[in-house]
Length: 101
Image (cartoon, rainbow, N blue to C red; front, side, top):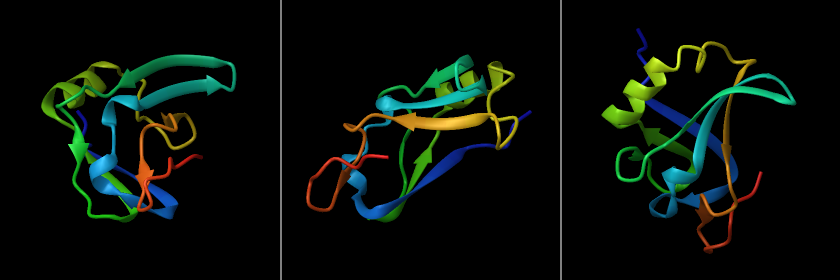
């Protein structure tokens, strides 16, 4: 079983927390740079941000996304094989510019 209910990302920019588009966030299990084994794309209206504006974005995983994460047995098993990816449309900074990696 998993105790994961939220995840967070750090940014060097101050992030507008109301701008977070969780549907463009993916949690991926990756064996190597070229081999992706499992991916969970968060569901619209299910997972959402729980943080205030700032450099850290905390995402509350909704029940459906949390259950899917638990079902995908390889996801979130280690720091060296689990990654969060997002597009430039995922987060805006306080000046409404796209935050990029």
